[in-house]
Length: 419
Image (cartoon, rainbow, N blue to C red; front, side, top):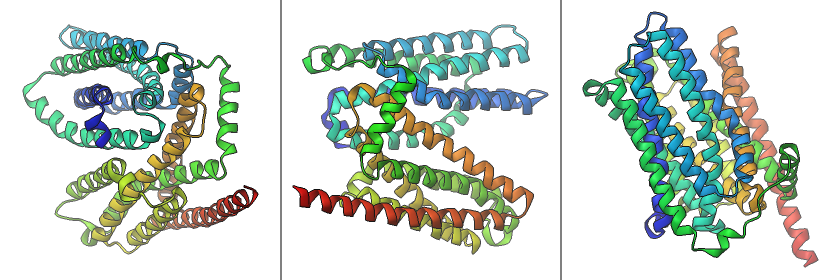
């Protein structure tokens, strides 16, 4: 938070990011509500879900094209303006006489295009934040941004539900367009201020092909002892966190007497708030809370908490589950921030966005992959078998962490002896 309060340009840049995130969440909720009222609502909701999730897989390409971009501030501004125009069109469509299903298909397509520009904009963010705050403060800045985005995600859902009572779907689409316009203006204002800093003009632009860039990113990550292993470990932690989000409701449904607090729906909502608060606090204050912890210590701590959370699910103790689930979200988020900080200080600036994009793609892919496998096992057999599989995976991860930690310590001792 310190960096947000003291660095004016970073503060403006962050506010621009928050505005675009808030507007997007508000419209997504409105569009889902609209689709839920259609006759074949299941298909409509599925199409919206695809249009939201598919662009996340483009993160790796967004990072690559961001590294090839010379005028990054100009392009992040243009992306915001394009998204403003797109949602302006959506607002007009909602007040037109377009057939409901035609409207859904057109808006889904526009949403897909907008989120693809969003994936490119996300790729531009990392190198621009490094330029604004420096590599040493990147972890703090990234953690603050991620934490506030978690808070916005929670707040926007409640605010969106309230706004739907007094505003039309078209009004919310226009509100989203305005949020992108304001974000674009803020991005432009920061970009114009940064033009005066000579160091920002000297960055080399990546001219390599996609495969060569990915190979270079992988090589630079592999050069750092233990970094690649930590990336995979954090991916497993994120996958465990996501899987629990699907397995816990199944366990609650099977043990309603023991695990339901007030009502089933309230318990599920409470679980969502708990994990979001944990993730927000871990992102915002994790670097300060775990300042003396190495990233290897953090992965070991987070995995132990993941194991305890899984055992608490077995024990059907809902209050213990919620407490440990909160701690898991907090430590996993803090570990991710430490990992990103290490990554940023280990790779060349010209392929920074590509490397961060590669990391994010691995982290994003791990969650649905593990969730799909474990929920399939649960559905085909019994949830207890899914939980046993999760425990086995967590134990293997823990053993790998101990091995990697030992390997890094040995490498550090050998390096100090040579010096």
